[in-house]
Amino acid sequence: MITSISLNPSIDRTVTVDGLNVGGLNRVLSQTDVAAGKGANVALAAAALGEESECIGLMYREGGALYERRFAAGSVGCDFLWCDGAVRVNVKVFDRVKGEITELNASGTPVTGAQLEEMTRLVLAHARRAEYLVLTGSLPPKCPVDYYRTLAEAAAQENCRVLLDADGERLREGLKAKPFLIKPNRYELELLTGRKLETLDALMDAARDCLHQGVEVVAVSMGGEGALILRGDEAWRIPGQKVEVKSTVAAGDSMIAGLAAGFRRGCSLEDAFRLGVAAATVRCMTPPEEILRCAEVEAMAEKLRAEKLA
Image (cartoon, rainbow, N blue to C red; front, side, top):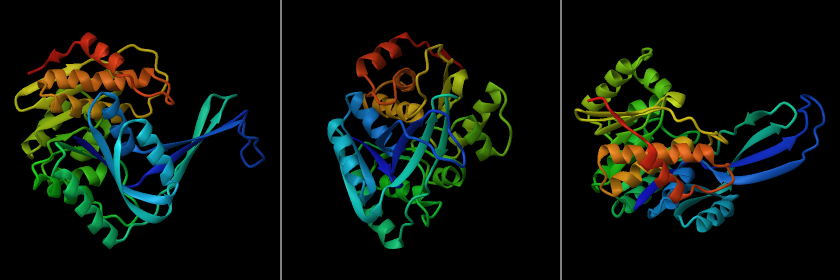
């Protein structure tokens, strides 16, 4: 089982206009609402890859049914701590004339200490049967910045491997729990180390610093330059792929789902890495409203060539 956490769910509302009139009246041509958030994206991608997956977390009575329907359609299990209020709505205004998207993201509903205590108990219960727990996405207002560390330490008590995809202080604090894997991008790794990482050697040195802190696997996404992964003395790199990009939404979430799927299948570091990068690549090639296709990911993984760096 791959279990992902969603602590600050969001509905992504995309509205389309012809020429955004700032400060004036705009006629909406179309509107779509999608149950979203990084935790949801990971769970859906893992299920699309044929893995048993679930998403657990905080959910709000207004808007929560949209998640239940999407997870049911995607064969994803869910178990929520239901709260009063509404799921936050992130508005994306697509201007067809300029081809630009303006985003307005809500912060979410503040959480209480009691809700977080109950959430920790829920994570513990699921960690007892999950092999991998993915901690990803923003934290809601009033949530301690070290809460991912709390959950990672709780999961470790049940011998559940934790994959952490976070940035800033959430990543810095989460590292203290020695998660199985972290997946920073170049910028997030620069924030963590406090220095510019402009060369491959610099990135590898920074990743090795994380390994020395007790992390088993470090995967670094480098945008168009590809990605690299390290474990122990082993290191691999896959260059960026020249493909038709239809959307980058959920690409990083698909990568971490692919990595978790690869490790769950008992793959080598190289093969798990290829599956993760393949999932991210195919996600970029797929329109955002369509699901990831396992056959396309597997075919892409076969095509990818990883370069051994160490």
